[in-house]
Amino acid sequence: MKMVKNNIKNRKLKNRKIINYHNLKEPDTLLPLSKKEIVNDFCSFIGQESYPCIGAQTALNSNMISVGFFGCMNHENTSEQICEGLYRYIDAMKDRPSSFLTYIAIFENECISNEEHYENELWDLLFSMHSYDNQKYSWNNEVSNHTLNKNFSYSIGGEAFFLVGMHPQSSRRARRFKYPAIAFNLHSQFELLRENNRFQRIKNVIRDREMDFQGSINPMLSDYGHGLEAPQYSGRKVSKNWQCPYSFRKENEME
Image 1 (cartoon, rainbow, N blue to C red):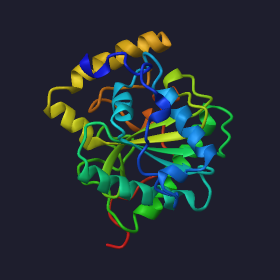
Image 2: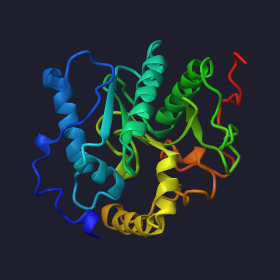
Image 3: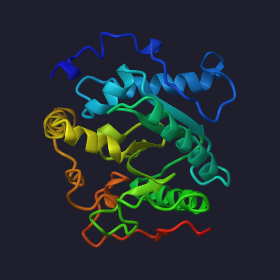
Image 4: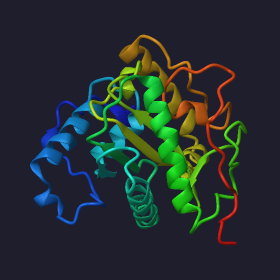
């Protein structure tokens, strides 16, 4: 595919610009060295040859990745900071419509011991974010707020998101980043791909590349619009009896 020619390694990743360091007051040029190193690590991670997610690589090449840095996943201020960053991301998406614009939350001080630990931290954080967000916004009315419903998607700022969890203990190479992180992708991007008849083609390329990258296809991944979405977020292989430890409100609690 023209979009995914092996030009990643031929480009200088050190010159990549990641937009919108939302929780830093300094402009990009004044980003602390430690965070610049994390950005470079993330660019190199996504830019690996045969990395499965061509959408992430396209976003990287197009400077359409927005990053927020946080300490620990469940620090008392983290959920509020991520929500505010996502609100800005949603506004940016309206100003810069794209099929591949993603928001990455990186937790530079978080230590993850195993996949189940990450999953627990993830859902604790998502519920805390929901508690903050629900004071301002209702759940997106086009998706379900019930995690065992096939129409479930996570909602922030009234928008539906598909989440991809990453951490150093992941059994899947494509999710095994050296820092715990979460990629937030607007569902509207998947709908746009479908409308443009690009979704199936991209899905097939991703799965072919995952076979090359990992040697197998992630057993937890379902096609967009099919199967349960919530169990896929952490990347851990879970049983059919999986249940989310939390429930999410549909209506804004202020209504």
